[in-house]
Amino acid sequence: MTIIRLHSCTLRPWRDGDEYSLSEQASNRKIWDRVRDFFPNPYTLRDATSWIRMNRSYQNPVNLAIEIGGKAVGNIGFTIKEDIYRYNAEIGYWLGEDYWGRGVMSEVLPAMVDYIFQNFQINRLFACVLEENNGSMRVLTQAGFRSEAVLIKAAVKNNRYLNEHIYAMLREEYLARRESDSLVAKQ
Ligand SMILES: CC(C)(COP(=O)(O)OP(=O)(O)OC[C@H]1O[C@@H](n2cnc3c(N)ncnc32)[C@H](O)[C@@H]1OP(=O)(O)O)[C@@H](O)C(=O)NCCC(=O)NCCS
Image (cartoon, rainbow, N blue to C red; front, top):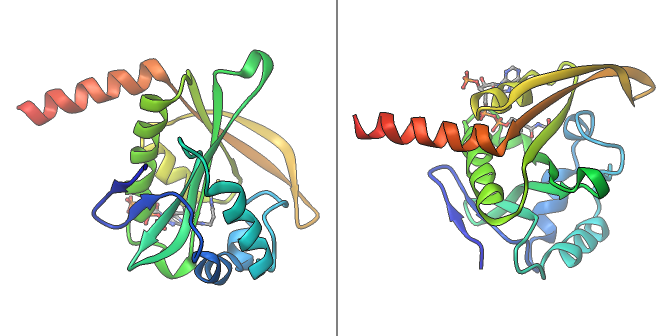
């Protein structure tokens, strides 16, 4: 079973019993404003149940719950693309508002990047961030993602066209970063 223990939280598969904390934490307009429209709002117990049913049985899960104080309070996951993009994966994440600004995602994202590059045949990892989501852009830059492109007015959210910022990391960049981190650690 995939369990990644970090200082601020634990990453682990979604499981039965997470429904209440999931719907409580995810049902938040401030989160919905920054993610895709398919993310439910309000996020009901029924939504939570179907998310958990979809995600609990994976051997190598693509979505991991962020557990703090025994409760699942966020998610980090990825989607592997198809056809000529089959070595690409898009990463996405959210955290319950009560836990923002404590450095949780700054610790979670690099751990997830390790998990993906070490367990899946992915060559390019990328994230799409809506304009004004400075927290998410900061988390990505700190984890070593490159700001790759800005797609002008590519997204629509709340009836506004918004720029989409693409951040990416190649496997070779990940390996180079790991190498330089381990050299620094040895000094
Ligand atoms: C974006 C999000 C994941 C950040 O998680 P977090 O655990 O609060 O982030 P951290 O505490 O690790 O902060 C990381 C950095 O971003 C900065 N930051 C956090 N929120 C910020 C904000 N709203 N504006 C500017 N900077 C912000 C922090 O100061 C920190 O920078 P520092 O290390 O230089 O001090 C969280 O706010 C969230 O879930 N938002 C809603 C959903 C979302 O935006 N998902 C991503 C879609 S692309």
